[in-house]
Amino acid sequence: MLEDLSHSILDIAENAVNAEATKIVIEIAEKLDENKITLTVSDNGKGMDEDLLSRVSDPFVTSRKTRRVGLGIPFLRQAAEGCGGFFEIRSSPGKGTSVMASFCTDHIDCPPMGDLAATLITLLLGWPDKRWIFRYKINGRQFELDSDEIVKVLGDRESLHSCEVAAWLKGWIDENLSILRLGGSDQYAQDKKS
Amino acid sequence: MPKIRNLEDLRKVKESAKDLTAARSGGRTHIIVGMGTCGIAAGAREVMTAILAELEKRGIKDVAVETTGCIGMCQFEPLVDVIRPGEPRITYGNVSPEDVPRIVAEHLINGNVVADKVIGRTD
Ligand code: FES
Image 1 (cartoon, rainbow over the protein chains, first blue to last red):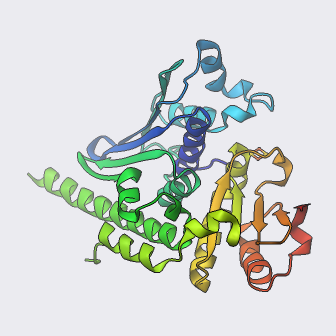
Image 2: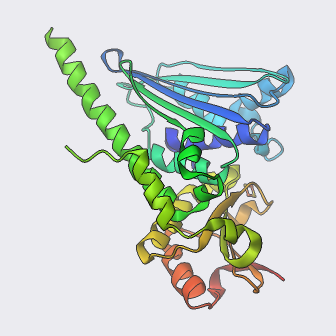
């Protein structure tokens, strides 16, 4: 099941793909001193009308009939609201959808992040024709991945289907995230001292 | 401090990898993982990463790894299709990361279908 945020991100991003988005932006922002983490997934897909919007975010109507719109949204909503955060989804037909969820990381029910790099390479490899932008911010410092830049380096989109490329990218993402986290905590410690 | 990989290194990785454009035109093996909502919920991402890791470990280069959305067989997720050139398309069901080394070794390398995992065959 969707036991962590990285799985939920994958599911919501897949919704964006199904909504015919060509550009999907995934942003995670951590504020260490506030124990807060905010996740935003926005796409330029075909969007939803109010009726569909109210159905997708209600966990009680996610039955088999509505399964195709995803388990990720109700999961994310419950997870966010269950740990003192908030959840918001905005969408308008023709304009795209934006899902935002915040979490209090010091709350006992805050879900773990899980394997973000695995989610990202699954998206890159699964839908190489989309533009994926991923930003991870910790206290304002950030790591950014733009699939268009990666495709530029590779020379073609098909290369994203190569297992060597995917494996390399996974290592690269993991490395950058851990550097960001290390630096982030140093920064935090210094901020506290000063 | 670990050596930071940069995107220049990726170019080298790509150059040493086999040309997958050829794989697209049907001459090579394809592995396709079902990545719809229930596939994801059932663990398709873990299966996908296990496939990438196994191919990498064994140095198998001429395989194109792809994903597909829902193919309407929720009860059998995660689903993995293997297409070898000139052979029927084999669909494996209820695949776990533990099944991956067997499918790679038996089917991809030795050419023997892993019968107990097969749920479909398309000529
Ligand atoms: S995702 Fe539902 S059957 Fe594949």
